[in-house]
Image (cartoon, rainbow, N blue to C red; front, side, top):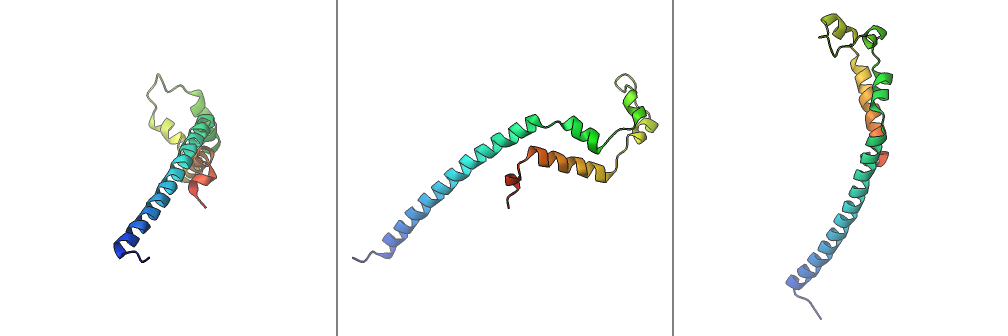
Length: 105
């Protein structure tokens, strides 16, 4: 029996819609698992330790308590870190908090 072009089009549309639904369901499930993994890794990440490793403060800045005093320009310039150190810190944070599968292949 020969189907009309409208009927063939409707059958193709149904197949595509079920494939699309399955694809979105799979993405939804994997996306939920990915979000849970990112949250878990974020909670376990010791950001202060990473910051100290990649952007260390000079010893004299660590000893001063800036909570009660307004830091001077000299204090601020002593705590300057290079852009490379900041990039290293951000890269380290991203690799600790996000699994490699997040970035794709």
